[in-house]
Length: 516
Image 1 (cartoon, rainbow, N blue to C red):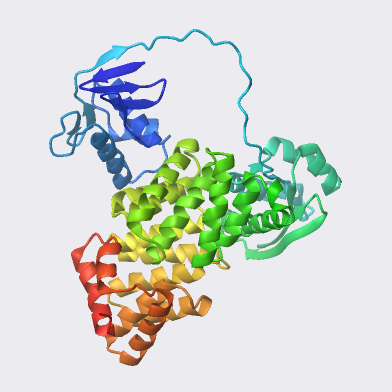
Image 2 (cartoon, rainbow, N blue to C red):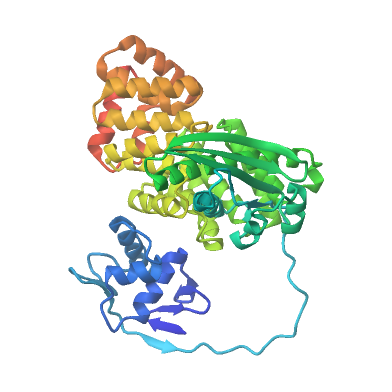
């Protein structure tokens, strides 16, 4: 069905909006929202209707909803003041009020069958999570181990980097003594997660192990001992810990496999794994190397959402740290991030990447919406949690920013970006005028990594505000080493504050520290 109004055509079959014959770019969720409003134009659509139809009843903030409404209006040349086409009905919802004609698109005659399109083949891994063995001797306790296994399986499925075998297949081995290699061959997987649960009185011991079935090696193993005060809280705690540990181990193993292949035989997946190994080293040279590898992956598969996402995030990361110019990188990153979202709307990385673009280009409400969407899709995504904390701080929501940064630290205590999360927490404390705490957090960030700009920025401004001239001079010297182009002008023009007062507070800290 096509809907025609003013100079616009909204085509539900082609999922396309055109104005005067020219395509209007729209994020998939904004398109869905607009299509729903137009189709339901005979009535007022409530907020609950939109959340049910567009977000599948997930929890959605008002800022996320308003961001999508504003984006739909902007695409139509409308705005919140005139409300020419999309009208807000106070305390009731929204209604599309334009004059609309409906047109059933002509059906094309079937074409002669041609050769199937060539698809980019990638050697992506698959993983199976076996039912955790109940070692308690009490069959009634099976539910606890099964629950943990299912939660791990569900959480891993949200990563989108690899295929996770469904429960109905992996749980068929429960209670059977079958070699890992046989399980891997029968399920067609490379990695197998197995474990055990031993529950005695009010304590539980859980072991988990990640196996590479192709080599027979154990990639990772851990043991968890907990008090069973709240069974479900313990289950969630251990699930989060196991999933946070498994994903980087698989990335490391896949990167090792890619490193052993000759460059000419690398496929898009291998290139992505190599790029990620550079991405997580968090240096300017490594990010440049990652970008080159990602561009090669995209040349093999132009719709490779994961490569597009990481490419966009890498470019915006460089902008924030002063490695690249915003005006040059923002259009490239935004095009890649939008393509990633179109390719796979359920990928948390795609939303995090788009959020990073919106953040750097001063669209903070849109950025917060994208980070919230990423975290709704994958609550264990520490990078999205860190980005979310950063956006909250620049939006003036310091307390929430500090809490989000702390969650990022807890989610991934061995994260290569840990120094960045501590720096974000420090900046949140700086904005609240807790300068001593900000200094302590900046020092902790530097203890983890002494070559990143964020921590030295926080240290310099906090020392400047406390009058510690020696510390300010040291921090400023290190900052100039890590970011030679730092200046008051760069700070005032390149960082996306929502509040002029917050920007002036930061600039004043730098002035007192001695930055010209």
